Amino acid sequence: MPRLLVTVGSRRGLHARPASLFVQAAARQSAKVTVGRPGQSPVDARSLLSVLALAAGHGDTLELTAEGEQAQDSLKELADLLAADLDAETDADPAAARATR
Image (cartoon, rainbow, N blue to C red; front, side):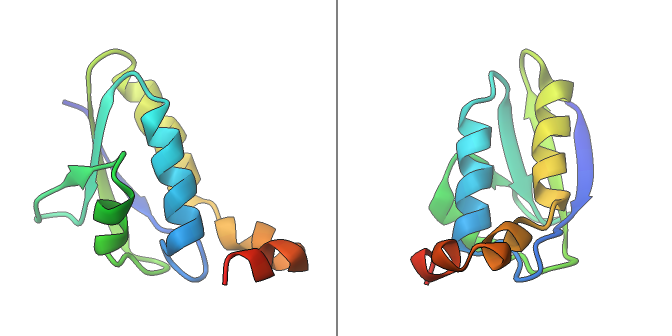
């Protein structure tokens, strides 16, 4: 089962908006993906509540694992999403920032 360590890139961590984008992307994958802190029990990457419960902040390391078809591709796509500063998009669009409050 492929694994990948990823550093959370969003400036405010994996709060509601970035977590929602991550969960939506995980749901589109054909592989079953889990996410968690290294050394702790992983959670289903398709569960918003579980992902939010990780309370991952900016710079925290998370471990992604994938099982099934296109596992490597799924890990790459989700790792890229976690590593991106998804808050930058909200900060650039004041209307989007108000919508997430």
